[in-house]
Amino acid sequence: MRKKFGLLLSVCVVLVMITGCVNSDTTKSDPYNSYKKVTYGTSFECKIPKGWEFDDSNADYWSYYQNSEDHADGMLNLMSIDDVQGSVTEEQAFESFISGIKQADGYDGGLEISDVDISGSPAKQYCYKITIDDNTYYINNVVFDCTYGWGSIGIMTKNKNEYADTFNNIVDSITVLDSTTEEPTTEEPTTEEATTEATTTEQQATTGEEQSNDSYQDWDIDEDGAYVYAQMAIEEYYPNAKFPFDPSSANVISTGSRVKIEGDVKRTKDLSYEKFYVILTYDDPEGNSYKINSVQIGDERLK
Image (tube, rainbow, N blue to C red; front, side, top):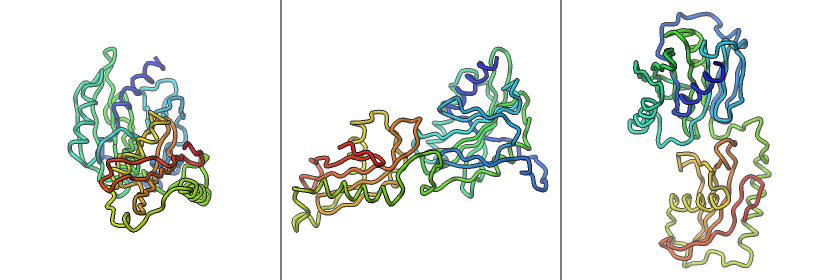
């Protein structure tokens, strides 16, 4: 039964569960005395009841159990969702997300959706029922924009609105991390090391090659196109690489025909984001032809 509930919540999470439909909690003084702060990768942090059992056996999400003997009796999930197109507040993106939930095995209606505020920004909350082996469970969730995709926190209970006070406390404690926040468990080069390596890489790539000249100074580089070319270059080495859904998170620096693209990438969906550096040179002002000079992720030079 324990394994079945783990699989059940995994399905809900992959389709992206998360919210709370209850706002009936009464205000309490110091509600977080029995909570601890946890940080989920580089996406967000929140406060979790100290006594809930932690489980990180699944690479796609973290679980916390109110009752370790009965996972359906208060199962909390934390995760980030990378493969979304658009913001939580964009109607088409959110409707597509909800459509996936409705198509999941066990979905049993009762869907309620409302607008909420998470970490000072608009977000969504929703709840619904699932029925597995004639047993009905209730899913309460929130989804919110992060620097990379969406963040999500949700709880499964046996009864509607169960552990509502606790869940609302968790939701109220969410803080979205900005793009400069470093993940403590990720062994990445320091900013100074990464900058030095990128500078060295660019110098190496330009050796023996023509630098920008007067005929290149007026080239109007398509930054979005350059970013796509950089993604393609990285996918030559990591076909399953994941990039932030917002291209504006990348930095495109052009000098005539030469372009350096800096951004973030996950080598696979299970790994943390790392900085990448790609340098390319256009052969014509229209950007129809180009060549890749160098590709680097973190401190690893790939080309």
